[in-house]
Image (cartoon, rainbow, N blue to C red; front, side, top):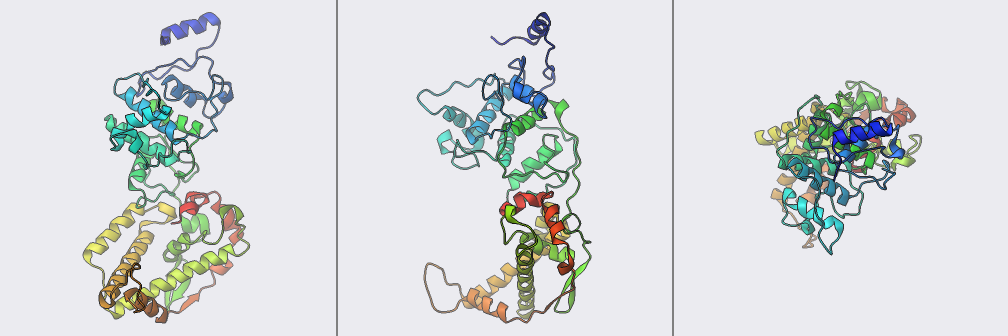
Length: 419
């Protein structure tokens, strides 16, 4: 039988031990355990109060009776277990879920979570970022699981912050994950790992980090009030103003804010993060790759004009909607992303024109006859594009840029996935 709060308090007084912080009276779930003297390895650490809260809720236990091990990584099976327990607690249970006999311990919890994730049984859950069971889970997978549980239980978190964007999470790449994560920022469950609110979605989740998220979820008093600084690729990383002219293309000046998306996409094109010194080939390669993209974009625009190819109102509206959603990602504003979206849409329109005019040879059926794509490649190469440098990029302090990169959202997720 689990001791009541009053009994635990009286016992602490009799033993001469100061009682631990009271479990929140208005907590999202009821108290299930008594923390007692707690885990010695987290005493005095940043996550001590969080560990107490999640232990008392029975959502997380120690690695041993005397150690919580906050730096250890959580596995996919463990976040599924937490999700199943949380759902049970939110819907009137006590978090105790009987294990299936003669089966892997985690199958019980996968089975319990399956209906919430849209599956009939736990053995079908081979995606969702929570398989295989023994693999370390990612931070975004944990957020997604918690979000699914809250939605299924009919829990809506109050908004306490006004975070508009997450600098290292692309909403067009992981829309549900982005929406869930942004909601957690605004509910005070997350605040990012730096001044810009960097989330590190693909990083493995530690037990301490999981405890912090869960404790803030359970206890409204522990939720965070935060206002991350906006990350600006031009100013914060490159150290220059967005309106600075960096190149001219066929005689037309190109400001940094228009070149920034191309440079951002290629920033780590030539080196692994840990090897970058910004004194060797990595920097010129990044700029060179961006200039190749710039030439390609300019050539596409020329071909579009020659063939009278324009974007439909629907295509423009889609580009505008995508740009609005991505505003703030990678330190680029809505206008920067709009230029990218319109350019990609124009590229698709030009490609479609060539394929309709000259045909498309499927890779499954080899043919020596040139098709639309090969003709497009030849025509792009033949377009005369003149790019002249204003000398700005060559004069930048790339070593300083490299140091700044390590303290901005570029330090992890943008390197792993690109922009």
